[in-house]
Amino acid sequence: MFKSETLVETRPLEIGETDSKDVVSSDGKILGKMTGVWINTSNWNVEHLIVEMDKNTAEMLDLKKKMLRSTKTALPVRYVGVISDVVKLNSTIEELSGALTESKV
Image 1: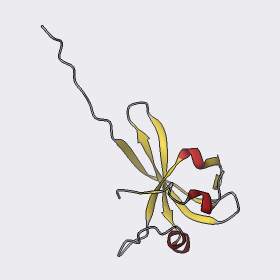
Image 2: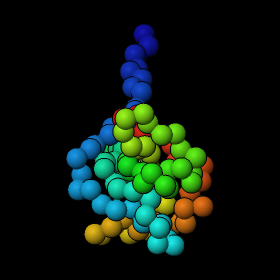
Image 3: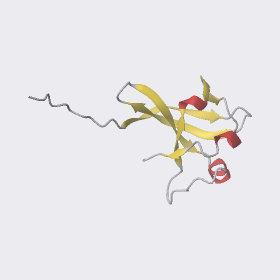
Image 4: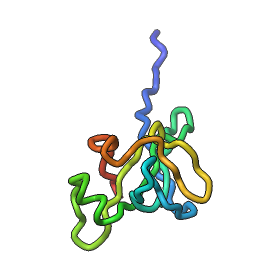
């Protein structure tokens, strides 16, 4: 007899309502505000920060604008340098081009 294995698909868990912090690139430009995080539920690691993008930055990065609300993106944590009163990235805005994905919310 074969043991039945349960295959569980892991999806990221989005946690909102975090303290809103400015997200600043390594060259001092404001990307927007961190509004939440995505957590990988298989290992419980934070994988992405949810960033509500500044309008000008979103346009510069050619991100889609929502009709009635601001653009939210998922920023991989590998681009985060330090989190304190602000989220300071280890990359410039230009280096982030193509690294941001649209948040599902």
